[in-house]
Image (cartoon, rainbow, N blue to C red; front, side, top):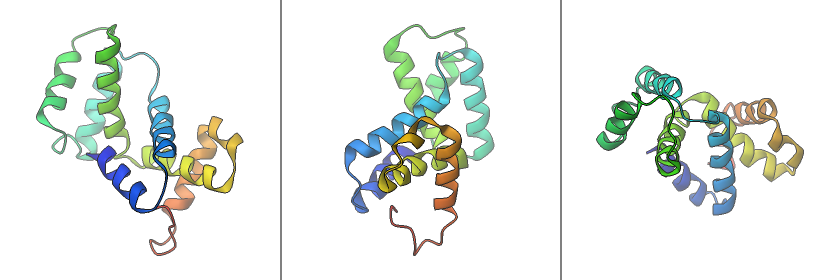
Length: 139
């Protein structure tokens, strides 16, 4: 749900699709490498804590609960699906939105070297999110 709203706000503000894909890729990169049971449990707790759990589709919730029993997810397809669900959960937190908007702001200002540094992206994103809504350019 959050990914759909991120695409919609970016589309209305005139941000090209490949930049949105890059921003979502950075959020996915911030999640971590291998999908393990501890990572899945951590994201289930995060979803419940932030209130996203009830907004997730029932299939996503069932998939997270069922795959929590696995030690490590070896299937590339399943790990991509689980990573997509985790990106939705991460975009509901301040850190995820800060990374997303940090990438958009960095590319808009021409700061390509900031794309490799998550601390810099979070700083740019939080600075953008703290602006009043009428001064926001990206949505």
